[in-house]
Image (tube, rainbow, N blue to C red; front, side, top):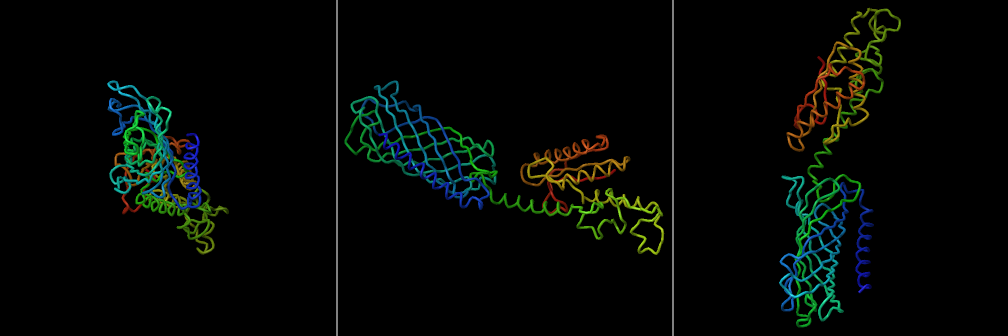
Length: 414
């Protein structure tokens, strides 16, 4: 008996190890996790193979199972399972007790992805599973309590999943197991050698833990949604690149026609025209304006230019998907740009408008857009700007056809 257990256990470990090695070769190509481990507990009901006068309750405790699963893709996979059933007499039947052990290797179909559950739910899923295995029935009472019945089995069932987080899901499974060439009855008796075909029903509730470094497991991977997210990320990355200001002249690089200048005039890090010789004319203008003096209010014009950058949305703060945390260095640079402008122009106030993409519920996105605006306001207050000078509003979802991108906060000066 022990040798058999060790053999089946070794085969299960070999399966898991081999599949893990195969996964290591292709993991870099997968945007989702493929491994999971699961455990459950519940009830059983053996049928068909009884000696007269013996039976269990209609629902009999107890069943325990553990397993490991590997998904080849978001639709199909393979799992190895071990189950233990305690089978004992019901109150109105003759006393007996038996231990029943099963090992199985089963194919798995992700029915939720196949039937596109993702189009109407993000938290519910269904898996189907079926395969072959090995069974051991060990009666502890009765005439044959010293005998162990070993047989092959077929197991199939359906597992419902409720997503709790990216790493855990609650499961509910209903399975049926059919033994092949079962010699002993469930209570340890004998009824016509090799003619008994025992059947066992299981119902369990458990947890599944998703292993891996990716954000989502294959059970929940939505290729269409991920494609949309990747496209939005690419657009945001492009816009963030446009916000770079390598020479610090207050003009985004993609609009900057002349290094260290704004509209042809040398400016400092605040976008203010530089007049080192104090002759009333912006320094870079002296080389081509035939010594015509620029008015002293040219500095004001430069400030208005910076205000136009802010008001027209060229300086924006961007966020990750489903996040209200300021995303990147360039977005933090945008906050520094805004705070510097407000410090240099104490009479100007700012209105922050938050936006979200169209993924998810509208009500949730409305709240998320307001949280994003609030996080930028908090950053500006921490930078020394009076909170009374900053107002916020969440404008919710932005359609793909809009002139500006989603997942951002823009500024309007007042």
